[in-house]
Image (cartoon, rainbow over all chains, first blue to last red; front, side, top):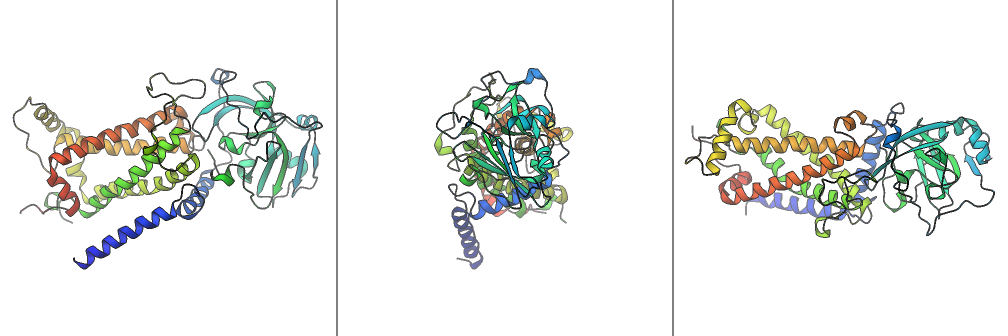
Amino acid sequence: MPRHLLTRRTTLLGATALTASACDSSRPREGFLGVMERFNARAQAVLFDERRLAPELPPEETTPPGKFPEYFVSDTVPLAPAGWALRVGGLVARPGVLTLDALQRLPRTDLRIRHHCVEGWSAVASWHGVRLSELARHVGADTRAGYVELRSFDAGYYSSWDRPSAFHPQTILAYGMNGQPLTPGHGAPLRLYSGVKLGYKMVKYLTEVNFLPEPTGGYWEDRGYEWFAGV
Amino acid sequence: MQAPERRRPQPWLIRVTHWLNVPLLLIMAASGLQILVAYPMLGPQGRPYGWYPFQGIPPPEWMRLGNWLAGARHWHFAFAWFLMLNGVAYVLYLALSGEWRRRLFLPRRDTRNALDTLAFYLRVRKHAPAQGLYNGLQRLAYTGTLALGLLAVLSGLVLYKPVQLGALTSLLGGYDAARAIHLVILVLLALFTVGHIVLVLLHPRSLAEMVTGGRKPDA
């Protein structure tokens, strides 16, 4: 057998074996797929423009009542504990707890934009609440806090966001949906809503917002979903 | 640089990019079907599209790659780059080498030949029309797959970044329309591949040329 053929075949076999071992679907954050995820996260961050807005949609685009899916990871609909209030901490000048009343006294933002689920469906509702950037101003968040972590009372569900996406004008702490107070199925009393991330990044049933210098993971992110997950 | 007519039927870059398409397209198709399983409907939530006959039916397990949604998305978004790079290398080579002249469909030059070839295949015409490396119908098919590839990338980008690429999203008719386009392209590419393989089995020499490059035409 000519020598160059042998070399070519060895190279091909080697490359195939390497791909097979480096691409493990059950551990997608490791090996070659993990390298590519980190590359894709950087590419998405470069593409992200904080002035670019998700289009506001007319009322007739609204998904019919009951057709907007309700997702939570607990066995039954999580219900807010008595005396619920939002704890705000991390690198902030004024850490503390905010009641729903206190949050509702902050400037209100309304938006009707499309929701993009990682599963591939989309749905439309109107949401109202207070911008996360407004809350950051209210508590005096430090500029060194490049990440925001959100925690919930839904069986340990949490996620962490990059600062540009978290401070996007369409990222809000929502206490209302379609003109009504938030229902338990959609994250009452307070959830994150945003036009710039996939649904699993929008933590419902909020208990805590922490402004942090480093990213933490997330409930689904720790199980293999992409961390950046921008749309 | 040689004129394309004097070159081997299949220059090395054409062969390499052609064969790289096989694993890359298989990975993209199989991981794409695993992604589809998470929501095998093409309409937005609450409003299924009536025209899609397989509404809600997940593709069979043997066709899928990635175990579950997260794994399949990692495969899909990792290998999409390599498929795109492969496509860009091919198109650049076509443009710079002049190979596009004997491979791409040019309507004024090739329409007549494509129709005559079709007539020959349908047994309306007795003899095949004269042709160079490819006949008009082949040029139409190969150019069509390039167009499909471009549309697959564009609709895929809409599904990946519907907000950041908002202008492209509107151009393709919205997020759910882009999902439909992306899946229809997969079906069309699969149909092309079936036809491609059938014709290769009928003309085995073309397969040998796609491996070895073939002989240079006699001067």
